[in-house]
Length: 550
Ligand code: ATP
Ligand code: MG
Image 1 (cartoon, rainbow, N blue to C red):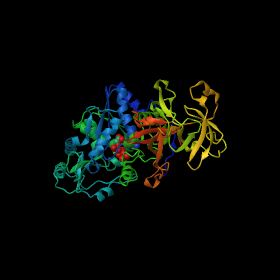
Image 2: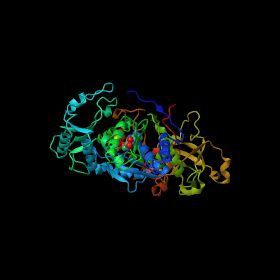
Image 3: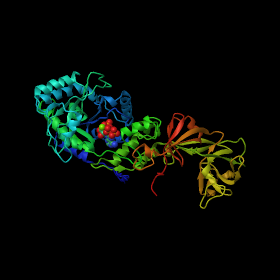
């Protein structure tokens, strides 16, 4: 399959979408007074960025139109589901800022009812037990272009199907010996309508119902019933379920006829799933990354999971903005990863106090500044928010500066420190570089005493360069994790495309108040946004997109 092309979506708020139009029509016609949506994860992995889009949509719509969104665990496939995943999903949805109140459900709570519905379908002539082998069933299923053929068991009596189905439930048949199938139309042009299997025998222990059942409903059968039981009005799912919609409607119509579910029936609506460049958003591939140790667990800050995003410093508000910005569409596309990063930057710019941090330190000595003298510089916490005030930052004779802010032999156009040149130490004095001492790896300079920022003399010294610094004596030495894209290809397939340089650990010198400030997220001036994660700092995102195509 060829890679889909990346469509850069930038800064266009999508306030209207086709789902909203459907909802508004239903409210206008009084089909329903309130809406009810659901977010239905299968607890077989951690939630990823794609799920965030679905969560924002499903929980966001009832906030706009009135109603509620259920959190429902779609746990009909016992072999892959675990409590650990249930817990992580609950945490992630809460973290994104959404609440379900008392509307927490598990599909497995409806197993009795689903079973009852299946007996009803048999009794009303809409389902039968098929005893063909899996291979035989495949052979009679037909293809996308040719219809299938009837099973020799299709016309077995209702009594016989009912007896066999009960025996399946009671554990009298081996796994795979029989399946229950809906009786629809083997010649249907839609392969999903050719008598789909609705129950199979599977001896597996379920994370909630343990060994009570040895038959389990198929997802396509279970999901419409879950929606109907919960009186969902709009069942929003991704496009790959479009071909399932006729079965969804067929099943609920039959059950409504039998008085098992109530009208109005839920309406399935499909939208395009989120695809992003430079990541994979498939649980199967994410599980592989974790299990094979390519990352440090589900919450590794490089993972496109919500647990990882949280440690990375991505914000719930950033995700909500992103969901709004990419909107919902009916055809698949790939969103440029930078769109997500822009949303995070925008939000962090609003909430993150500024700090000075030297990530690649080299020593600077101010030769004419008195030994032992200390001053406190007044440094604004946010250049656009004077109301955030200023903080005192200690200044002394010996400072850390960025190694890249000094060049012994300057390249053309370089205007930071080089012998003979003047630059301003941000919020401090203007200095003149006097040389570099190789033996001690130290840059030397002198300062102009009357050039202090905020004093009348400051304006007299016009300089081009303005560099940040941290006093060596006061500095907070900390480990910083620089994260980059986990995959080096725009459309990665899997682990073969991992970026080997996605994580870099460096020893840095930070402004002393970072040692115990109560905030956790900061802009390190000139470097980007960072979050405190245990004792270290993780880089969330750089100030500008360093991956932009030139
Ligand atoms: P995966 O394909 O990664 O295994 P899934 O669809 O099987 O994901 P579910 O737990 O079934 O995972 O998903 C829960 C909900 O999230 C579903 O309604 C699904 O449509 C939605 N969802 C999953 N992936 C995406 C995505 N990339 N974009 C938008 N919605 C998604
Ligand atoms: Mg799914």
